[in-house]
Image (tube, rainbow over all chains, first blue to last red; front, side):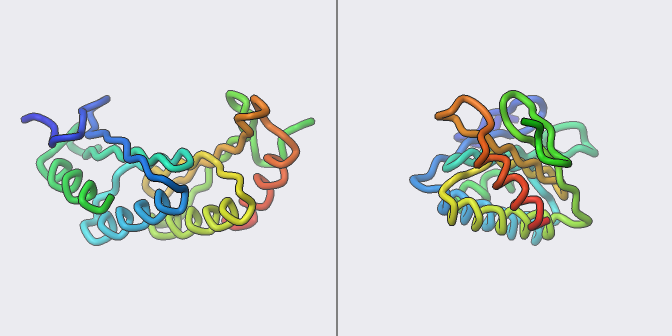
Amino acid sequence: MDAPSGWKEVDSALEREFSFAHFREAIAFVASVADLAEAENHHPDIEIRFARVTLRWSTHSAGGVTERDRELAARSAELA
Amino acid sequence: MDAPSGWKEVDSALEREFSFAHFREAIAFVASVADLAEAENHHPDIEIRFARVTLRWSTHSAGGVTERDRELAARSAELA
């Protein structure tokens, strides 16, 4: 199955970079994603470089991207 | 000058990994570091992998690690 729109599959993970105007907005986005991750008990890797945030969704136990990763990738993008 | 205790210099940045028991604690640490970064207007790169957080302090305009990076690295470690 293809990656959700806006995402690419890199090293067996769904990856997308989100750019914001300010660091504080980037951090607020990370906090929202963290709440989603806790609620769903599934946690993306998150990288913050000033006002840019990269999310990487994968399922280590499955060795790659699952339907759940696709669903949570799409839901996390709605938080940006 | 040497890196502060607990930190190593990697690719012209001061780098350190912090491990927590839970994802939520890792996110709380990131929020504290973000507050420090905003207050000081100097922002580390931050990587979150479940309950592990890696901070990287450097000064791009100086092409490497400055005294300010050393100071903020030490202060950020106190937040863990």
